Length: 222
Image 1 (cartoon, rainbow, N blue to C red):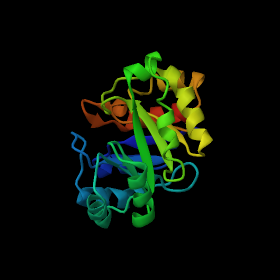
Image 2: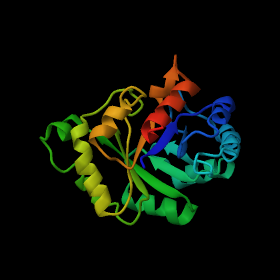
Image 3: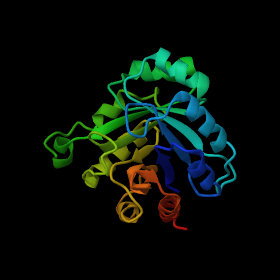
Image 4: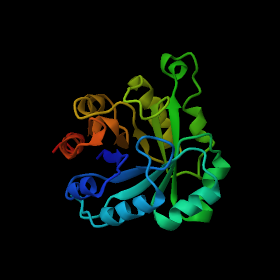
């Protein structure tokens, strides 16, 4: 079953409204963004997340979004916001990802942007970037270049990335321009391990619980 990650949460009311929904991960943005939260606020929201129960009976995992943090940056955040997963969107190396897992005791996900050259086939080594992270990462996510743009990338590359992720035994999540009206189309042609949405479940820049519900239920086939 495809997993659902809802990213960019900033208020407790929306988090509480997700109780009972088939959501597997809830993300908080610590990188510079209009959705950025402080460690203190994230800590409060994580407390609310741990009270939620999904259709499987457990609470969702919590994921923190970072761009090129230092280990000290992450330690500082984790002291206030006990995340389950650190999601790395920058130029982080495999060595750094290993340190995140081994020294900080959290899962590490690495994000790759799908470039125009990757999509049109003028370069063929996009998925090859994943192989150097074997054994030091717990998941991959592919997104439109820039992230948080609300724009999709060329989905035909998903199969190549999914195969590369499977070869090293980790899940692949797809982000970039997803929303309740197109996620079923994506899943009718591709089988990523999970899907990640942020702006696609917002109304006027604010998380919309009805859109979150619709997105999650369409992914899960409810």
